[in-house]
Length: 529
Image (cartoon, rainbow, N blue to C red; front, side, top):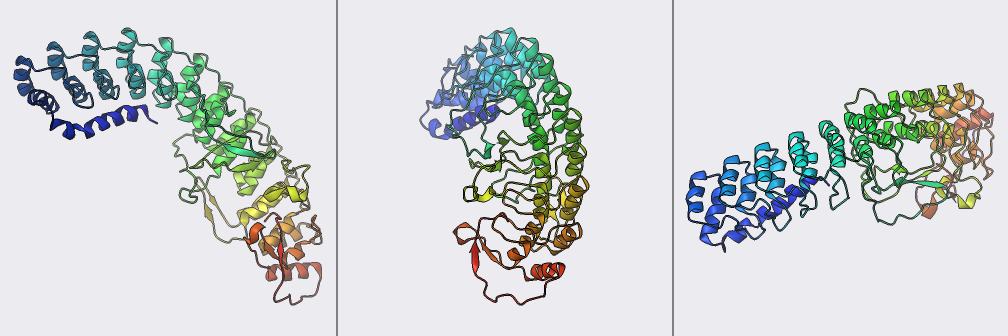
């Protein structure tokens, strides 16, 4: 939640009941506050001479001085203070005139309030004046507050964040630098969420639900403030800090598409093997906005480099192209659903699953293993493996990336062309991929193509040596899958036979063309689609 909004929201709440309170207000009090709201100095002067209670408040605790500060009127503030207005007055929501003046960025009013005795350490609103200044980025006001005794490491009520954290998350590098100069802790840690989050299955890595526990550098990375990150690192911020969900500043920068900031972190010593390589591939393949009801909009970026450039840097810094996923992903889900991935899923497998040719080329050139099978389900029996029972294999994922479709697919940052699935398979084969490699369920690329009815892919694989009679652990050949209704668990996801694919496979195998059963029996299976 924006702390600026927190203060402004409380003010709006105060404003919303003004009309209800004015009906019952004493005439003199009403006259003063209304005159101040109108900015009418000529009307205010005689009211003050009449000894009108300058500190009288409306039902929500807002005084004339609050409204003068909110109205950004230095002359009105001076006049009210001279008449005895209390600079420490607090509304029922904890808001002070000082906070309102800081929100407006009015150095003159802030200085007058401080000289009149405003409390820089007051935190009835949930935060101190320095928190508000840090969020707005006004360094001149921050200097005034610190000079009057503001605590540079004070904690706000909601997330136990310091002014330095707010400055970093607000993308205010000058404020970050100033707070560091006056002694702010570059490694302070925000509060950790108390939301109970149980473990997932042993073979699954869930999307990460934010746990809190961020540092100023983590905030800077998350919000793409490279200059903030630079100052924090120079001040001793831990570049490889991990929050309670094992998320690093580099992870946060990558998954929020702040690639320039990620590059800076790498240059400053961030660990290239913190699984940011996988995350860079992941974000390069985010769905376009509106394609999924549960997916947040893809981050907008104006960075000089993109995800592909960052992958080059990560690999150059020593990132392992074969490192499997072991930690939780940053969630882009617009809910508390925890989408799971298979533990051990590699960057090349993720790239192949989206036919991401530029990423695949980089990873394969760097030594990614095209024949590695995801080990998340290793050791489980077929009946225990559920939807991921066969594990994952890059060539199968590349085949399925086409899904038998003929049209292009628009993602957030790129477009997948119809031919990309075949090109992805070609890349894998050119880098040592085995056209007959099977996953843990015995499924080969040809099995996958037959299930999809992808005839061009079937022909391509056959031309490159695919075994036409390969059998999976259900003792089925690719041809068998084209002749079978496939029914998913619970009787859903019915996939009809593929007669054209069956005819193609029969021709390739030298078998006579036959007329299939007009009413083939459904076969219930959880085989990977």
